[in-house]
Length: 449
Image (tube, rainbow, N blue to C red; front, side, top):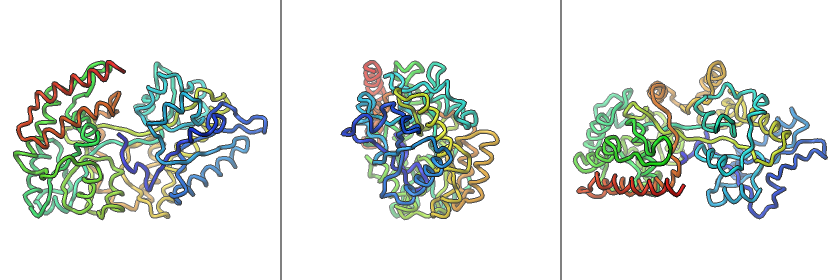
């Protein structure tokens, strides 16, 4: 699943219409006859997102001024990547020269032989060695590099500091274990007046997404290391469902309304009636700008359990038809736009602050070493949100294993949705049978893959 609102204000990433000829997107024609190398790219915000669109255009113009031999042609649309057209665009030769992907796309694009090997050209990307290795590895297959990470998120626990204080809990100490989550949720729910202690998703594949995150947090896995077998029918998988069942039925700390999706839970948190839910940092500005929340009341802790957390994010891959000149130009463009600390479309914090976009949210760090220090210094200098509310998240993430989503994630999440929804809507749900049934269905999905 992708996290919502992963950019500071709004990001809509482009899709080139299937009606366009292949030459309009990514044919490998570098336009050298005109004396310039031409690259098509996506990830341009639509005209409806005026601020971000303006920032993007400014950055492209600045890049072309610095590189007069490169012509960047950007495409916009929303959403950025439509699963219904993504494979068709790749197979039909209609994908942009430099194209956006989720982390979970990387292996698939390589497996169907649609990605250019960037390994011989990495010297063109000044920032490559400064990027987090675990993120670089997502786009590395059999020792070859096929993509570049651009941003990412990791799951944590969003909680309401005001409700914590009201329930007699320390707002500077979010629960570190699932037992503590359960105990704190029970105290918050006891406040009454429709207050819910803890909420979770259980529909539209989102329940399966959160089951995966909760399983990771307890040290479990959804599938085996070789990707061939389900590994949910385990003590860790049982603990996930048992905990949800007990909070729902024994403690009555999750409220009576279930089959919730992200918008429902965000509305509950924004209205001040929810104590905790799992999310990435990018939910915080949505809670404030769209759901009525207040930055000072919203805090973020690390994933309870202390073992691991689910990460996601995006990056860029290059069309297999790209010429060497286009690959070199595209890597230089990525450096300029996204991968220079404190600068560019995602990193110009001073510009974002002037536009009243939130600066200082604890997104997972893309860079390491001196590059990370420069980026964090620029962010801190322009922060306009209460960064102290996120300290527990930043500190706690250092000790967690960061794990991406499983293969065939959406199909697997659909299966796991049924298990999560069952324990939240049926008091007598048979957890052992639910896990056994789900495991068999996931094995079938993996076998087809």
